[in-house]
Image (cartoon, rainbow, N blue to C red; front, side, top):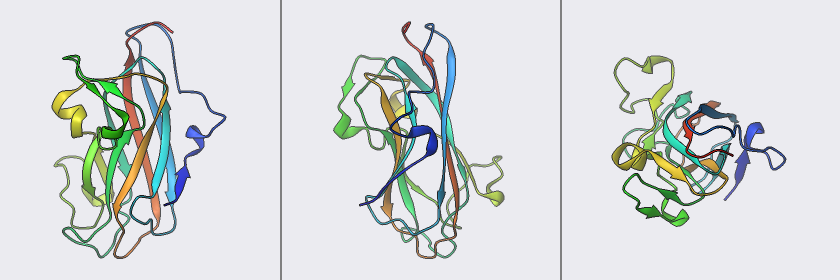
Length: 173
């Protein structure tokens, strides 16, 4: 299991923004995928501050798998590495947030694309998972947005992944 960290998520970096409640921010990170990731490999993409209320975001980038299809292509989860709280007050532990922003996304050439988001040029998909079904999600502590590999690529095509996470500050910090 390898961990790859985007520049904006490095250990010496602080969360992208903190400030007045109800101010909107966007955290983001870009990483180059140059070798075929193995299952359980992670890409630490960006940092979010305590009190961030995640309201949306996007995964953009290259398709990364030129020959895989169906369940046999590069598949990922997108989540955070700390606990979150839903608007109903339900606490979701850190052990259950690895797919809170996107679950089982295929990045192969035949992956279903979202109509109107230019799928022919790569991936351009809005975040989903728990965020879509039960969001927005309140972050309990400074955390990182992480892409986790579920299945490896059949035919890796090197390229980039960029993750954008939109959030409001739910409290002054």
